Image 1 (cartoon, rainbow, N blue to C red):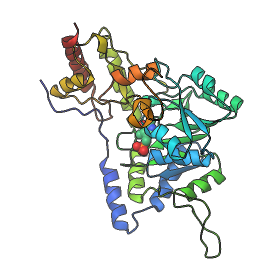
Image 2 (cartoon, rainbow, N blue to C red):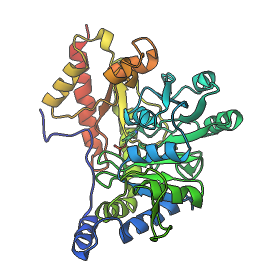
Image 3 (tube, rainbow, N blue to C red):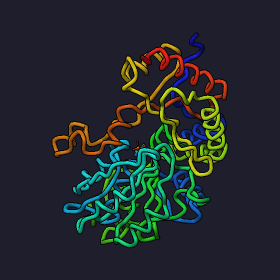
Image 4 (cartoon, helix red, strand yellow):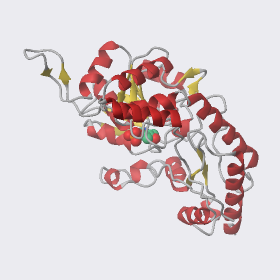
Amino acid sequence: MAGEFLPFTRPSIDEETIAGVAEVLRSGWITSGPQVKAFEAALAAHCRGRPVRTLNSGTAALELALRIAGIGPGDEVITSPLTWVATSNVVLTVGARPVFVDVDPVTRNLDLDGVEAAITPRTKAVIPVDLAGLPVDRDRIYEIARRRGLRVVEDAAQSFGANWRGTPIGAAGDLVAFSFHANKNITTTEGGALVLNDAAEARLCEKLRLQGVTRSGEDGMDVDVLGYKFNLTDVAARIGLGQLTQLEAFTAGRRELARRYFERFDTTLGCELPVADFAQSNWHMFQVTLPLPRLAFDRAGFIRQMRERGVGVGVHYPAVHLFGLYRVMGWREGDFPHAERIGRSIVTLPLFPAMTVADVDRVCAAVSEVIRGGLS
Ligand SMILES: *Cc1c(COP(=O)(O)O)cnc(C)c1O
């Protein structure tokens, strides 16, 4: 029954990239250097000329975005509770207060009416999250931000390669954070990048990612701001360069697999499917909710039975405000019903460029079999 095990995701690193990495390793310069410069130039070209700086994670990109926007103690930052915990953790690490707003149950992204209603005089920024690579409505979020005087830090960790009305994510807007973690649409193993507004922000980003060091002062060097150790290595940047040349093919491949899911997924099972946005989404994930109230087993039981059939299933993500750290700060069950229900019932089905449509068919058949076996 089970064939070869199909994970929910797997990176595709080609031989050209592997050879390129070997060359970097032999070159004598392995940390931040010429490969980082070249990767940043290629990313800037993708972002239609906006300045881009690489970092050692998407989390670092989000944290530096908040620092560059001047956000700190006393400030409120609005974001989604249905995201990877990094999104709100960085609000806490810069000393500001996260303000969660429930998601739209169809897009699973921030409900923008809710964002508008949550703005107070202390609100300084909003962090929209493009969950699964489905872009948040950029026209509407920037209209709100302009009218209410807010900075926007786009958590585009999952939406590299997606677009809003034809404009690549990152090519427009305020501060845009990407992640190149192993599971993302392009990877550097670990890594990230921040798209900035101008040369001054780019210089501040360079300073903050390396201890706050600036080339000036009496000894040709000074530290005038508290920085971090967030730089990307040349080894990682070389992987990123190799990945970037395949971005279009990766996205096209993911889109084709997503189409197959919509063709083959049994819509009578009671699962909620993602928004079928074939023009804009980069199909970072294909996620469905389970009809848990009608099932004889829980999500863990579903995942176990899928594993038995040779299919890996992920969970992205339980609602952030119900994690212990956030509960002690006062959030509780019932605060954000859509995020909580989706967070409890969502599963990520396999979707990655090296998969075939036959794999999708196999996943759909396994899902049907498992769910039908649990329906009363
Ligand atoms: C992956 C991810 C991050 C963090 O990126 P890292 O590179 O793992 O630090 C932040 N937000 C979202 C939505 C993500 O998916």
